[in-house]
Image 1 (spheres, helix red, strand yellow):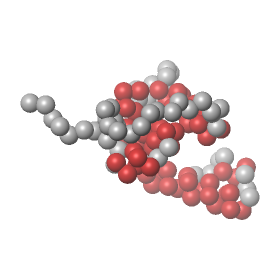
Image 2: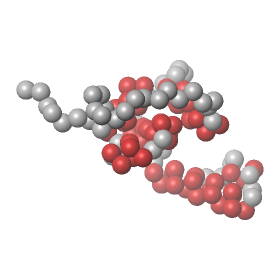
Image 3: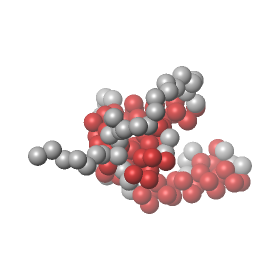
Length: 116
């Protein structure tokens, strides 16, 4: 018996219109997310696999999947996989974000490198 329930990323055959290829130059954000991903996936770190990232893409809440841009979804998958693997926890991530935001608010660009 075949399931009729589709995963949120399974859009094949649905009337969504043509796919427009994106030929823009990568932004600094996109390049950084790609670099972080490669550092975590490739040897010598090899913390997780592309297949693990794909699994996360397929299981994030539908609201995230539909509303995040492509590299935002990549970053979310990295966050979830780092937590899943026990490398970081959400409190540590929140503390680092708060430190960066505080430094940005005070104009302390160098102050974020060694804090949190």
